[in-house]
Image (cartoon, rainbow, N blue to C red; front, side, top):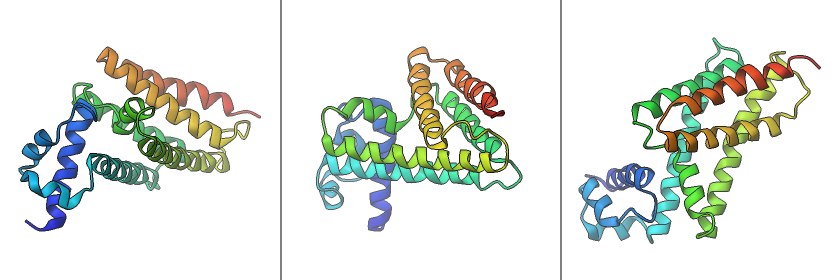
Length: 198
């Protein structure tokens, strides 16, 4: 197995383990065993567990943005429908996991924001990138007359992401899809519909 493939195995195993158990409750031995990688190999690829965590966050963020972009590139749909389809896809995915996963970025933001300044800043940067992508979609929706110009799309994009993160937290606590469905209803059918008229 080449070096890149080994590193990817470690990052994939680390993501799966940390998203279910948290950062501090994820031991390197368990992750290495899941990846079938010898313990001595870990420090060839990562300086420390914190470096490992930062690279996991970056990889997760890149994959999430790529998934979002895939929906936003669907030219058969208007911008609001593109965004709604993305969230509906995630509702189905999260339900299929038994509500155990949630969002790695949100989970670690709650766990590490007061414990690691490096992690906090990295998570904050990722969330800004996500909200910016959502805001751009909403700006296009404004240009195409889907929603009113009454709201600032940057604020609306941030509100959307914050609400979604909160809904995922409630989903994990209740072990139920209803908080996610409520988010979709309230954001797309209530909030955005109220911006249709200036």
